[in-house]
Length: 230
Image 1 (cartoon, rainbow, N blue to C red):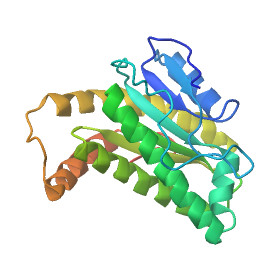
Image 2: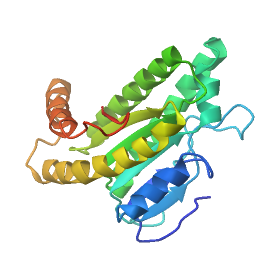
Image 3: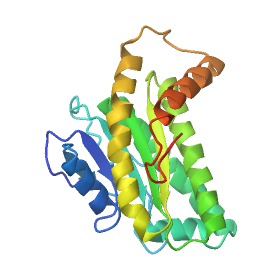
Image 4: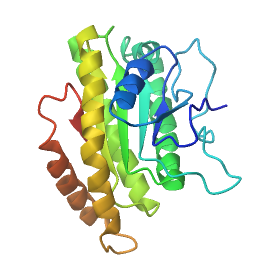
């Protein structure tokens, strides 16, 4: 069951209560962006089991849901640790299931709620530097997959970003970076959605336009913590 703050929320935040979701939500509110909270997508092994193909939380099928500005998906510290700390076969299986979970939720949100941007963040404070790099690569791959699957489902102009929190000092930097990113990403997404485009672009054309959108947004990311254009 979803945890909502307001029916007028523009940013949908999937995250564990008490984790990174709190400072990120606070930064968004300070930036004038209302937030609605949803339950997290990936859980640590001790948490409740989740299917990789479950129905996305908060996506109502009773009627047309209210459009939102962005979806932010957070992988909390315990889940991140279970995905990368050991590097064994079980961790690889968990990473694949978690990636499926994140992509399913994000694409369903983009398609049904008209989100213009998706941000993926993981709390990697307990990981070594090398494993944080692996976590960032994994998030980047998931962000690319979300953009591609959204385009296949007829949504053009989606802008994606990803980031990892490696130290306590990164928390505020990433939260502030998300606010900055959204102020750039949403106008970019609106412009892309309003531009005429073929109903189903070829994959090569999609990859080219996605790189062009990323390059435009990436120029504004200097000093935005560890948040990166995907």
